[in-house]
Length: 256
Ligand SMILES: *[C@@H]1O[C@H](CO)[C@@H](O)[C@H](O)[C@H]1NC(C)=O
Ligand SMILES: *[C@@H]1O[C@H](CO)[C@@H](O)[C@H](O)[C@H]1NC(C)=O
Ligand SMILES: *[C@@H]1O[C@H](CO)[C@@H](O)[C@H](O)[C@H]1NC(C)=O
Image 1: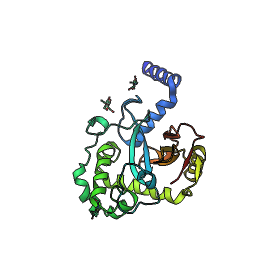
Image 2 (image 1 turned 90 degrees about the vertical axis):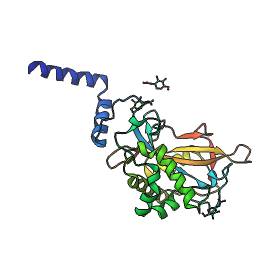
Image 3 (image 1 turned 90 degrees about the horizontal axis):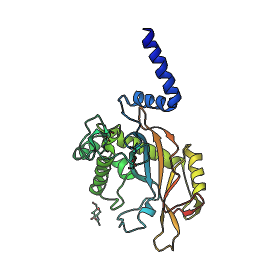
Image 4 (image 1 turned 180 degrees about the vertical axis):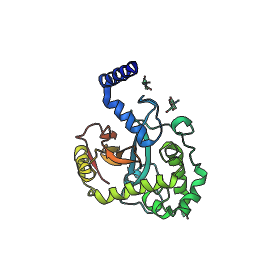
């Protein structure tokens, strides 16, 4: 007994000296997700969600041929499980050990989303800009996002919850955050405005404007969320505040 107690004390001391904070975080992840995530290897550990919103006028300002009405509000690109090194969790097809669940197959989605009454909301919040009036085109987009990201999320066997969570995050965001179109903002100004609205540092993804002689535009705005139960739970700061062609927080970009 005494020896065992001594070992426990030793372990505790080792944990504290080796990084108790990380140990507690791992413990929390285990508790909140209800399953053991194994290692803290940044290359293989699902650590947080990245929620990617596109600015449709900018997505369509490219080789992408958009058909139908182009929304003038943020729409969803995807809800992505990320590794702690900020790379995406590899798709289920590439690494089945990303989840202990048996994920719902993508070919089951059309019926599930229909019976779950989500299609109309999805067409508004998560349309495929290639043809915003085509349900079929958007269904392909949702299936691709599910296959690439959803199956390895905490919702692998609960696609309705996955799509509902994304719709809610998006609807809350567009209500809380508004920018004036045609106006230029420094990356740091945009970050500040997002932070004031939702209390988390976003990742601002920039692209160059077509025929704009190098002028930068806002392409996507990404928000980062903690894994949790329910999941995603609570916003957190994204690891980088800009990406794409933006190289500094002082870069100026326009909201098309
Ligand atoms: C993570 O991946 C990078 C590059 O893919 C590699 O250099 C590094 O050693 C890996 N880290 C661990 C802890 O395996
Ligand atoms: C697959 O995922 C598991 C658990 O997350 C990890 O240990 C393993 O290294 C991954 N393999 C590849 C090829 O990414
Ligand atoms: C877009 O979708 C609508 C409705 O399904 C269809 O009638 C139309 O042909 C599509 N347009 C293109 C260019 O694919």
